[in-house]
Image (tube, rainbow, N blue to C red; front, side):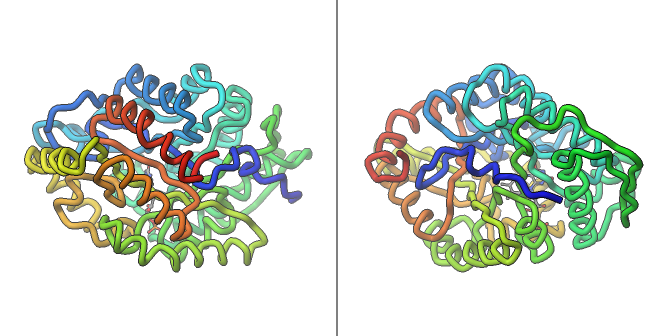
Amino acid sequence: MSETPSPLRRLPDHRLLLGLFLPMQQGAWSPSRAPRSTSWTFDYIARCATTAEALGFDLVFGLAQWLGKGGYGGEMRFREHEVDPIIANAALASLTRSIVLINTVHVLYAWHPLHLAKFGAAMDHISGGRWGINVVTGYKPSEYRMFGLEPIEHDLRYAMADEFTAVMKRLWIEDEELSFDGRFWRTERAYLAPKPGQRRPFLVNAASSPAGLEYAAKHSDLIFITSPAGADPEAACAALPAHNARIKTLARNHGREVKTIINPHVICRATEREARAAYDRILDNEDTVAADNFVHTFQSGDTASWRGHTRAQWVIGGNVHLVGTPEQIVAWFGRLREAGCDGVQVNFFDYLPDLEFFGRTVVPLMREAGLRG
Ligand SMILES: Cc1cc2nc3c(=O)[nH]c(=O)nc-3n(C[C@H](O)[C@H](O)[C@H](O)COP(=O)(O)O)c2cc1C
């Protein structure tokens, strides 16, 4: 298979990439009933994406999950509603011009690589080379059962994703019909036309385990990482240099370049006191049932990500928690960069007002600090 130029060349050359974790699901990251505007509706998501683009963000990301009635439950029916993110991104492609649009797909839920290759080519054409697929293998047994499948053992999932991605890439890149008889997938005389105009979309993954990181090093351009030391940024900055270096080494062993992006929950206000009060307000209003179910899902699953979060930190949600003034947030961003992270993909509690404040106060300071060109 001929390799193609890395899609990473299509990203602007900032010292720290800046992404927005879209609030695709009802309640976004936080099982808390504290008042806020955040909404899963497409109109709200579109305003977040277009605002992020206007503020100079490099990418937006939409997660995908399959939950039963009531989502994670509680009064807020946490995460019950979600507009499918690949469909949402197709619509966002027409509303935006420059920002990269990434969404999750569970590739093992009864898809064939030819489906995703075709969708990817379409998304690449519609967006002008701005689409990326976050390849995930599904850590919830209940999701497999929804698709009439039996849950699959963790490392086997990544072996399947490896073959899936290899076939999908060949369909994007090769100019001949493809016949393939693999361990998990087969195809006879499959052909894709048009090819993606930009040869191939961004490939993204969010693994932490050895098998997941081996997959990511082999295939992904962007790797969404989590802190190996929980939500406290000081502990995270101590643990992240080794984690980032390990990922870069794994990728280099495959002759590849990858960028790592971490997901901070940013609570930023004009004063530290106000920021701490906003943090406390989220906690004080926790939806207990939703929080219990949310925490239980992660602590009982086989995911190697998000280890070390306390229950309260799950109620805030997201990965590393950054709470403070614009100056303090930018200082943390600098520390995360020094710890080897190539980017941050931020999430907020009250998305549109928080994003607007972030754009007005934090983004200019990031420029002053040399983190953004
Ligand atoms: C930033 C981020 C986004 C993720 N998005 C999704 C998602 O949308 N859907 C999903 O099922 N899993 C998602 N995951 C979970 C990962 O795919 C993976 O299961 C998890 O990080 C555990 O990694 P491991 O399989 O290497 O242990 C995400 C993880 C991270 C860190």
